[in-house]
Length: 155
Image (cartoon, rainbow, N blue to C red):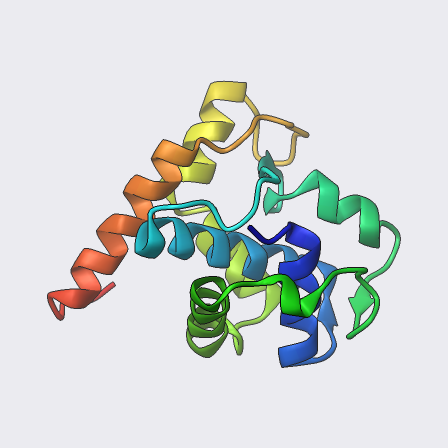
């Protein structure tokens, strides 16, 4: 199994420079879709329901204080992903890689896993929260998206 460091390093290698917020959101979407597609976690690290959307504290510690990141800034093994993990990340990058950090953050604010975690924490819109997103809720949300997509419905 990959680590979030491996996935983040892989994303930066594939897509080049991006903001730390965008990297966080792409890691989250890769995690969610991989969970739905492969029915297994992409990495062990968890996401918390921060004010700007899902954030991995582990990844945050690696880029804290930096706005812009590029390949090599996150210590991870790009070759540490197996074929299924690479495929999931590549599909997410293909579908969401051109979105801005703000667009990705806005999307997460409308999605059940983040919304429910914020509700559990009783967090107001700009209030800090370290409530973890629930894997069952992440799976349910992303699985529903993949079913809708497979049926040709608007997602």
